[in-house]
Length: 158
Image 1: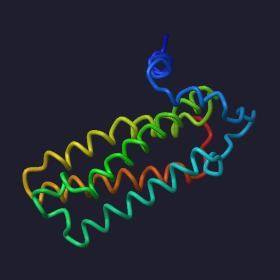
Image 2: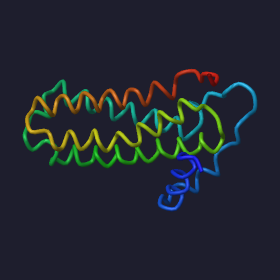
Image 3: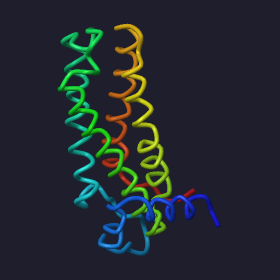
């Protein structure tokens, strides 16, 4: 059993949103189809863009310089939204895995889903304003990558 299948099975058993994978449109044969227009992937793009803007705004305004930044209501709400986004990224990964299409995007979405909690933890455990700024900057790049990989034209398998 491949690790992807094992991961999909474990997620199906533990994630209540996983049954919606079956509700997605079937894959078309031939060249890879762009997924950016599909509702799930379009939602990921919108959410990622909004969260990216929030992080960039915090960095620009210096709001994250406060030692109690990660305990504030704005960050707590942001963290919840980022966790939802990570779950959607994993759902996108599972959909593409089920279809057997767009291997690169499938892998990237899984990587983003797994990396998001680590980036959030880095923000929360930062010992100084400088460390927090670096952690937020890395989080902003991850969120931007989430948008770019979905909106990029699909590439044929190599």
